[in-house]
Image 1 (cartoon, helix red, strand yellow):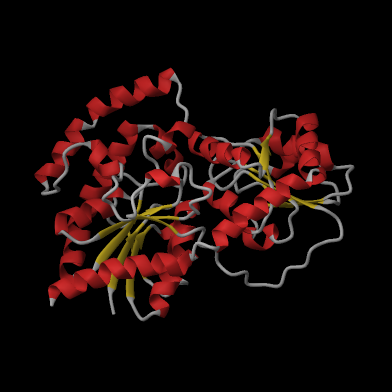
Image 2: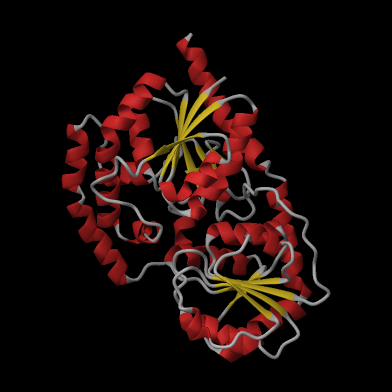
Length: 397
């Protein structure tokens, strides 16, 4: 039996892919402790892992789901979060890990306090990467304008004081890049296939592309005789009332079944009268919905896109962030989706029509789905984690 510690941020897209991996590890009689935030407590405990709340320790800066996007854009903010969170959790985590003696620490690529803890305690580390793996080649699809690059350069200078704070606490870090970026010597699990990952051939064999970690559906799903359109902008950047209004106008007189998930914040009164063919929800069981869908109009979060392609659903692409734009670019490049060119009724209607009438998009989605299914999923991820953990355990003997 191996002891595995997981660390993650309070974001569904970063947590969900790890859950089946944790279940797989526990089914093989391994012990898993999972450090996260209370918004994710129920999900994590359902796997059988021991959940440890970071909320009660992280008193300096509470993480929110919307911070996941800002972390990827703002290096100064990212550095402040990771350092303050690491220092706030330092004593509790350090003492826990020192006493429990894990064989391996697995941390989300954004939850760098997990990586830092592994470095400090000299415990084998695995990065859990729920987006594309990035290096100088794959980063090309994440285009940044001059303003963003200038802000990044300014942020690098501000991060020095935080690095010094970590060093004073015994963390062996040199600079911010060494914390937030994995190199070819870092064991890394990537939840996609080599075929979907841009420039996958440029990564070392330390990178294992396991495909999406998709949970099994908990109910039987029946497809309608009519075509089904699923619309969602995810759980974070979804307060685009005009977009949902335009979708309602675009399909109110159509013969499509429309399932639209609008999130918890939008005032439903602003959406007006909802036609009978449109089912409006605050949230849905996306796995079940995608098994009914013929097309998905999406914000292009990596988790949502992976789940859609796993079920062979072609996409209309409406990214809201740089990271989502990179995912959208790859879907479009491989011919499994098209961009929504404008947020208006005519453009929305035309994009969905194009996907439904051209079978090439579904065929290309099927090819990507096949590559996902051939990767091994949660079992392959668990195999790699246990290989590293058991190597560590054998060294203790």
